[in-house]
Image 1 (cartoon, helix red, strand yellow):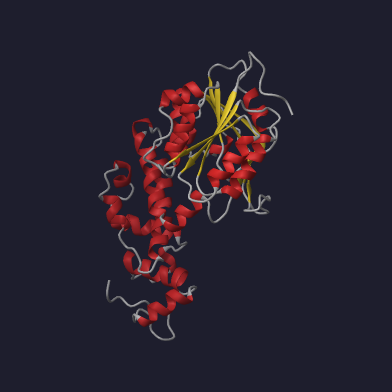
Image 2 (cartoon, helix red, strand yellow):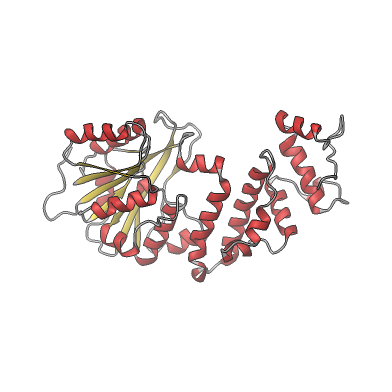
Length: 361
């Protein structure tokens, strides 16, 4: 293992926000402590943990001089990361999530991409998905990025994804763009990437140097289960900021129509079903949200497409709302004993039939 970068070399600090994840955090920090290029400082901001995270951090800091632990009242992940950025002093800042792991050469490989390249604002690398125990997922995602240079429009219109734990950025650029948007708890990483890529060139390492953990307590997965509409709205708010920069506006709208349809289906399968997404989108204070579906018919068509149901699959005499009911009955309610039982109790299914009644619309 090498020491911290020598005088004259670029230095790097690591910023991590955490809350109530001691077990994962300790593994995350172990992967940082095992780096072949040691960071000058590892700044962990405990965002109001109610478990023993604080005590664990104090114990680790006792024999790891590079570790700085900061405890604050809960303000959200974006605010916690901004506190970490404000306490950093190195040329570069690397971000890791408290449940993700770095391969030993992550910092060494990433920092090397900045040398002699003053126009490079941030770099990122490949990653793979891990399970809760930290093992590679057999069917998990593995991303090997290749896009570099001016990639702002790749992120904006092609939805090129960059995982936050793969990013190392110039601290001066982070300060220049104002860090993370503290009003956001979802898509704040994409928001930051767009702001950075708008002002600087980007480089990447296609090697897999990061393991991104997928587990029930993950921030994104939990939000998608409990409040998928929040995720959609925060993503829409990010892209809404850059509406004037769209070159291919239709591509952006098409992508978000698919996302909105998936959220609509998730809301429809709740008990009781939530039927109000179209109304909320069409009256949103975000212009991009209002532009998604010009009519309710267009919204219903998108939901049907997401269910894999074309008009040719249903009775040609059915209108769009009746077709949607038919699709939900076949693809959502029938496979679920709970939903099927409820529908029968409410008189929405005839005995021995998959017909959905039209009453109570």
